[in-house]
Amino acid sequence: MSTQLDQIAEQILRDNDRGGYTVPTPGLYPYQWNWDSAFAALGFAAFDMSRAWREIETLFDGQWPDGMVPHIIFRATQPGYFPGPDAWQTNKDPLSSGITQPPVAASIVRILYEQDQDKARLEALYPKLLASHRWFAEFRDPLNNGLVMTTHPWETGRDNCPEWDAPARNVDISNVSPYQRSDVSHVDSDMRPQNVDYDRYMAMLEFGRSAKWDHAEIASNGPFRVLDVGMTMILIRANRDLAWLAEQLGRDEDADYLREQIEKAESGASYLWDDTARAFCSKDLKTDLSSSLCTNASFLAFYANVGTTEQRSALLKNFERVASAATFTAPSTDPEHPEFDSKRYWRGPIWVVVNFMIAEGLREQGCEHQAARVQHDTKKVIERSGFFESFDPVTGKGSGGSDFTWTAAIWLHWARFAHSSTQFLEGQGA
Ligand code: DGY
Image (cartoon, rainbow, N blue to C red; front, side, top):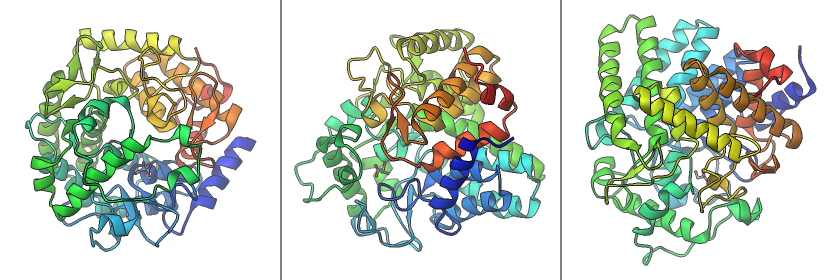
């Protein structure tokens, strides 16, 4: 049965459709973003399966010859966005940025394929997905233990998370060329990163541009080299889902290769465990220091299915603590941390796509009660505020852009397709 919010969500996807690809929200993000697009496909799958596949196909149109899927594909110049193609200067066709984003695509493709066994479309996408995973193994696994190194906070998707404060403070910003931000003309600046964060983002971008986007050079000598707990957990999960897809296509050798990658990361994950935070945390490779901060990305360990029995139970306790410290869960930064800010982007607000992955993981681990709490809170904030980019975990108020593609997409997926859909619609949370 379709509710009014289902219809609004569907309309948001249709309105943000630019013909084969969607923008996250008009104005603030007027291009195709990598992980936004993958989640958009999940939403389209609720009412137009062919369009869902198309979203992933257009995303992979932007894949580089070395296998990287860029974080933004610039299909038409939009003067209202900075930094656009002139700043990146990657000279790719289609034009794109020079960094990547969390590799959720294989996991989304698995969900599409489970709903609609379109083997021809899977066959065409599969080698591209595999190449993108091999890119991570080749360029972003410096310790050869399956942990993903990021070279820019924009890659992590969690742009201004306090996890990046210390590593980014060491980035030299003295030579950054003058620039004009445009994000703060679209939304309240209290909901966006600070100017000093942008100076650092631009210094990292300029390093990549001067290295002519040579990924080996950026990975070895770039100014920001951090093992990201979020991308790591997402890649482990995506490798599991890609191995499953490989098996569906009879690609046994690929499945063996992917399983080796998974095993490596399963034991490598202990390197990110922080006994003070009682959580998996990101780690600066330049200083070997952990962020010691429990974030919503830490809880993706459940989704990746990693950790010892002791680590999992400590992390679950941490989840309970964080959930009771907030009105709505899961805040992007621990509400008991001094840097928590309930409005400022990834320093506190709730992100529905991360909630989706956390809830999936918790449910798979048998933590039904906690999974239901995450789903229930997600539903409540959307009902209260609408389909915003993110939500204040204290008040439930929407923050950032409105009519947001991925928020609408997860709503549609949960409301219509998830095994827990009855619970989601009836709102029987913790
Ligand atoms: C932005 O423009 O804020 C994005 O997060 C960068 O990808």
